[in-house]
Image (tube, rainbow, N blue to C red):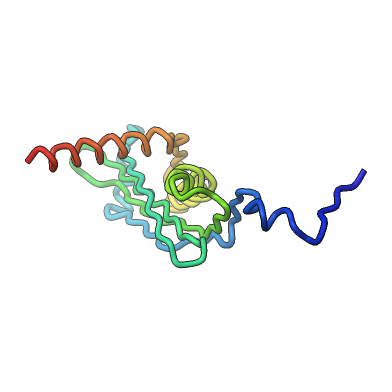
Length: 164
């Protein structure tokens, strides 16, 4: 069975189906520091304490296209000494169409980073391995939870500003 749309109408009249396309993915910025090498390799079997920070930024640049940047910073310490630092920003260009304005921000700050995360995770793991350390395997990130916490923080800040 086939569907036909008379006079080419249909999608244009209904506004089309909501959609998101990945137009590009790329490593935007990357650095690795191993400040105590080679001494850091002889410091025993104790695993360093890890501190991982994640940030997501999005910006539009016309016609439903957006760049989303996922920045990951991992810092390893033994006591006060920095063992290594890896920082990477992995980005993507996304095209979002036929989506209500109110739903664009959640897509950019939840769904897009979910798509980028496995690539950033691999880069961090390969980089630490190339630095002669065990690969840092980042745990999955709850981008929805981060988004909800940021919304709550913005609402509290707006309330404080209104009360001041």
